[in-house]
Length: 191
Length: 82
Image (cartoon, rainbow over all chains, first blue to last red; front, side, top):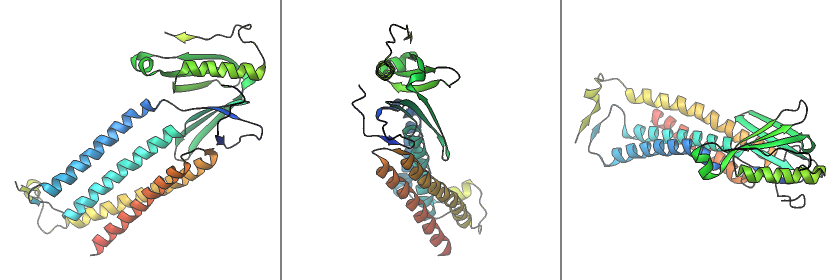
């Protein structure tokens, strides 16, 4: 990872001479909850659909066509909610450029927050992996402490937080020209 | 095996439950279509803010969702009318 290997990624507010070096999203495993729920609810609707087709005569208080349409609407709503969950994961990004770190948080349909800090402001990078799942699948949290009153950055559930810490440290070193080892920058690992 | 839901739920004969259910589905579809429209708009805004490789696929998915909801809305209206 170096300043000379940008990736083809662009975002709003990107400066002309700015190169995107790393784009990090949360580990896909965090989506397992809503994926399983959506699949289960879709299977329920499929089961009802199959039952209505292959069962014997059913004395319903409404027509069979209405029942099918209701099942279709149910499935459409489940797909819509699942899509919304996917967008929430997909557009929550941590971007590292040759100049700054940008944290894009997408909270809802029309609610997003963009935080950024220059690489010069980074003073401490700490990662943590807690629990069996995080250690087994190698994902965790990364905390970037910034100088002064600038807000700290926390990257949650990112894959390979140790590798990301090393990459960020390396890039900060290249940009700032400082030797972090000489200044005793901590690299803490919670075991 | 015949399942008699009318007897099971003690529904009075003559009540047009079918129409009420269709009206309910229309209301649900109306609000869902608004949600799909908003999501479509939001994806276009997000794609402008963050240019990803999946921008086109996401836009197409959102559009498909909106078209599906409007299609079902029209189907239910036709069912109510006819």
